[in-house]
Length: 280
Image (cartoon, rainbow, N blue to C red):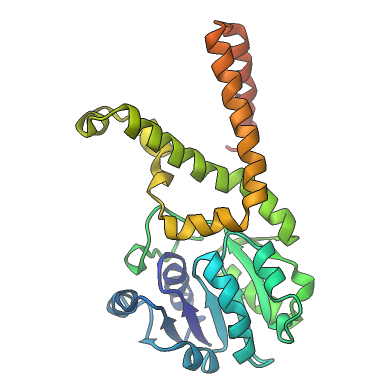
């Protein structure tokens, strides 16, 4: 199978490595506005050739959009304009409702499968690609009834070869849930990093005293705005909803400390500990 990956970075590159390793990909084209990404992906053996959008689409059986969600939403209609009923297109974005809506009435809508691999790191670029990135992770397919049976089966096969387990979900429900379990984590991490940078002006002190707990909590703050601003924009209403709840919870901790109500503080922590039974 010939594959074209639009966006030869972390996600697209990691998929390419694994699919090549599994023998699913006979030839991989890379399409990217950043020519340094193409050069690096070629150097690392992630892709076999760099090409332009039209050639890459017309000469591939399977097309993966692994670009920021705002760019994917704008580009997908053009991609679908170029495909035949023998080709399949899959995205890998963290928000789904907007991209599904963008192609709702497209004549080739059935050739598209909305997919979200639940994995990512704070790193970017093809040099950060890891072949086993998706192993054991969830892959979410949204609005599967809007995709052709053969397109859906191919994406399911790809997810299986990425060693992912599949979840099927409505696009709007997906965006609500990811706001709570993914997007708020990034906002919290950015806010904590800004708090520490504002209050602790000695960078050497931060470096010397930062524990593993702090480092893991702010790890997501290293994630690039080019990816996350579009996600927050596309999922604004859901992110605002969870952000308001998060602020409410922070105020509870603040009030407990201000009033020296340590019993209530213990209640808040004990309630939070229930997450242990969910995340093992």
